[in-house]
Amino acid sequence: MNLSLFSSRPWLWLAAGTALAAALPWLASEFIASVVLSCLMYIALAVSWSTFCGATRYLSLATSAFFGLGAYSTAMLVDVLPWPLVVLAGAAVATVVAVAMGAAVLHLRGTYFAVLTFGMTELIRHAVTFVEKQVSGTVGRVLMVVPSEATVYLTVLLIAAGAIGCALWVRRSRFGLALAGIGADEQRAQTLGVHTRNAKLAGFALTAAFAGATGAAMAVRWTYIEPAAVFSPFIGFQTVLIALIGGAASIGGPVAAAVVFSLLAETLRLQLPYAYMVVLGLLLIACVIWLPEGLASLARRKGRVRP
Amino acid sequence: MTLTGWAELLAGGLITGGIYAVVAIGLNLQYGLMRIMNISHGEFLMLGAFLTWWAHTTWGGSPLAFLPVVFLALLVLGVAVHWLCFRPVAARAPNVDVFEARSLMVGFGLMFLVQNVALLIWGGDLRGYDYLAEPVQLAGMRFTPNKLVLFGVALVLSAALIVLLKATLLGKAVRALMQSPMGAQLVGIDTKRLHPLMFGIGLGLAGVAGGLLSMAYEISPSMGEPYTVTALIVITLGGFGSIAGSLAGGLLLGLVEALGMYFTSPSLKMLLSYAVFIGVLMWRPNGLFAR
Image (cartoon, rainbow over all chains, first blue to last red; front, side, top):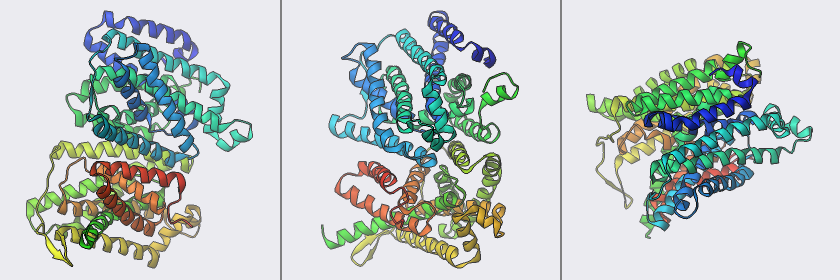
């Protein structure tokens, strides 16, 4: 992907890309459509993650919690509500939990924050598992009525486009400046009149809303929902990984990294699951050592992308 | 419940707690000293378990005799990992916050790497061997001797490490580094040698803990992750950087888990641990024993 063109006319490229991707299910084969779908899912997750976590440098590992909550709300509501409301409900549930979680943990920084969000994700997973086993008497839920594949695809496309649009908007807004200020020096931002607590809460909730909506939309692809699958910490790790490898301070970086990773995942993971994870681990280590600012810094080093 | 029943329950909790303490002390050396939150710590425990199992099934003999070898092997591995991964990260990070975040990500990378290499080599099956598994009677309580050995070695190791840190010049240097990295360098403590060594000792401890576990429990390549989480919980309980705190925290968590599981249900074990963890992090982020 040509990052320089993307950064000079982002809205145009977003609209063109969305229109192109929207036509895809009717043009390409089923396999390609499913690869693109997982690609879109990771774009939505990684871009919305970096909107908050990249700007403020708060390393959240809670993406899988929001994703899983979205998926579970779909499992409960898909028979009752119309589809758009189901997705919105997923986003709403994730947002509510994010606000509660954020109020409790956003005063902590660094490793404490990362580890605590991870712990909370696991806590939510174990709690859902326990409630499902004891109260509902099931270990998983089967989705009987699901919308058509094209509907799911277009929904995820809309969410991904929304996440990119939202990231573009945030970067140009006062809110985005406040988040970047927190990332550079939180105390200074506070002194300069940023209400850091509210800004962080709002940013965290925004990330969660997109992750929840993505989870709600992707849930129907599984048909069988169980906590171990939808709350898998791997979804959170992969999101962070994509955002960091792409460059969490940019938008084009995570998008490019999401494309690369979905291709890798779809081609390698099914045949060689262990080897895929080994490659992933090596890539992550290499990336942190040699490219700590992500792929986007490569483009920037050549002077093509504005920082 | 009878008195013996209580005693058995508490002793069982302490035995699990002893292992938690060794794993946590290793992790605490790495975090307290170098700010490396090594999320792959449990994977090296798993490596230690598999090394012991492999040596025992290939050559026979007492698995206890292999523990020093496992310790040394993982120490060397740890020095290598530090040299290959964490040293370059430390060299490039502008400040300690950035270093912490990046070394956390490296830890995740190592976790994927080590766990899946183990899966490639050994497959995902559960493995184990019998060692001192015949129960014995002790003051009216029944135990398998391997668990008693496990507890004894764990306690001796933890105590030895605490003495090492309190009484020797090396320990003094380590404690100085924990208090103030800059100050330690100013009085001539060689950080470049001490960091890899302590990272290696941390992994060595994890390896020994794994070897001990393999005597009493079944092992698999995915066994490490719960121990990483438990170690995190323990060092949060005991306080980051406090070795004696980790020992106390480990034993305490073992007891809490044993009691909690007895009075509620075993499926709540992880839920309990995480609840303790989050509670402590939110209300006493410097540990239960912080003054």
